[in-house]
Length: 78
Image (cartoon, rainbow, N blue to C red; front, side):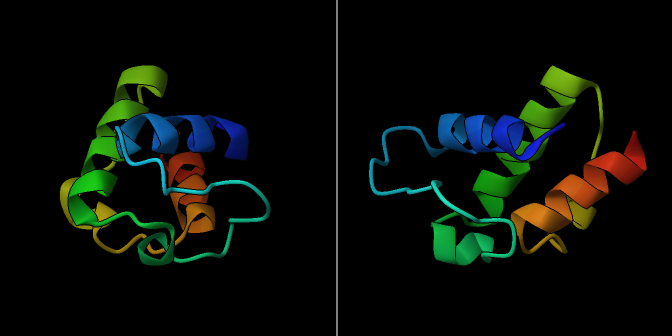
């Protein structure tokens, strides 16, 4: 999974919220600064499982603070 894959999933999980800006270097930007709460990240993890077959437990999702950490978690679980 690449950062562009993650951007796509995050955009899809943002729904109608047009204020979410995922352009530029977001790897180390906290999800909270990007406008994502824990519920949105659990939905993101569900989409990762659906699209890539990689499961991230909900309790682990709560410890993932940035897109870089999400990508590292996915790669370790693959």
